[in-house]
Amino acid sequence: MPRQFDIPIFYKSPIISRVKEARRLQDPRKKDFSPTVLDFGPVRFKLARHFGFCYGVEQAVEIAYRALEENPGRRVFLLSEMIHNPHVNSDLEQRGVRFLRTTRGEQLIPWDVLRPEDIVIIPAFGTTPEIEAELASRGVDVHRYDTTCPFVEKVWKRSSQLGQRGYTVVIHGKRYHEETRATFARAAREAPVVVVRDLQEAANLARVIRGEADAAFFYEHFRDRYSAGFDPTRDLVRIGVVNQTTMLATETQAIAELLRQAMIDRYGAESVHEHFADTSDTLCYATHENQQATRTLIDAGGDLALVVGGYNSSNTSHLVELCAERMPTYFIKGPEELLSPDRIRYFDLRTQTVRESEGWLPAHRPIDIVLTAGASCPDALLEAVLQRVLTWFKDVRAVEDVLAPYLEAVA
Image 1 (cartoon, one colour):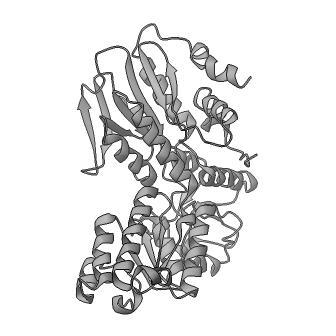
Image 2 (tube, rainbow, N blue to C red; image 1 turned 180 degrees about the vertical axis):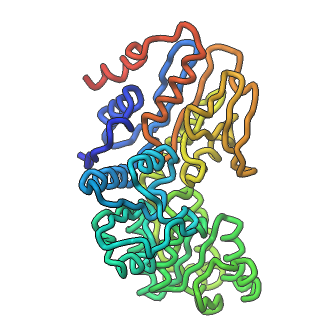
Image 3 (cartoon, rainbow, N blue to C red; image 1 turned 120 degrees about the vertical axis):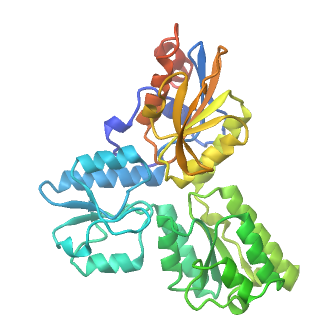
């Protein structure tokens, strides 16, 4: 049985958490990706098979609240946002936790403020060796409340192994995301490193590998995304691809295959294993499951999609992108963004701005709403969104009647 974490009760949900537990008992091997349909009559919600808190986030939440419980009267700091969810981070702030840095690395509180007796929580994304050393130099125990996701640590370990075997590390990620900054810094201790954001950037890197573009092209197109002393003529002969664990797993696989083919083009298929390392086992299973479940959810159809999560959450933004390919999609941080049946406030990924739209809820009945969330979104937040929508409909079925088919199946 998978480990059960001690998550505060206010993050759980009488509806969502019960559905997830029923699905887990029905399908312990996680083979069934079909969505859950909650039919309230005039509105039907389709929930992804996998969504919400993943293993790494549950671990981080448990550790953070334990740190508060175990240290009454002591100052408790978070290095930066523990996870990318404003409701979770706000609750921690209200309980006295203070943030040392922003998610982009700007200093909010000087290091000199810290004392050896202070508690500093390392976020789920991890941090760089340089910051660990900075904290340790002030007597802070950086290991006691380290919430770094084990799947992030797995990427770090593989990156180190690649460097020791003479490979360059190619990171599929967002250069200034906390996790990628940490992975970059750790990998660079053992290997040359370069970051690619997407398939287009990977295609540019492939041109350099095949000899179609020179070093000047590399330095221009990958400015500030390679490690010190990087020499493309030397450091792109042997490579391995790892990723920021919140990126689209299918895109990471496509990037790896594109770069592998570039190596075949340059050196021949018979020797590709000498130039390209297989790192497919480093992909985060939770991210992959959430994305696969979202694709199956989309295939089931819907009038619109509500995707709940922090606007700076990378994994949530990718779920939004998937849904938006097939239906009107609204990226919301919580029920407060559902202003009325006629008006919604949401985050526009394309413009990176918060917008408001009218006429978002169709007039016909019943309405099918696709509902899912990122890995840092509590179940309670998703239920609050569901309950907010239900207040706009008459003659909705009782919750217990709607849940009955799922609860009876595991009774």
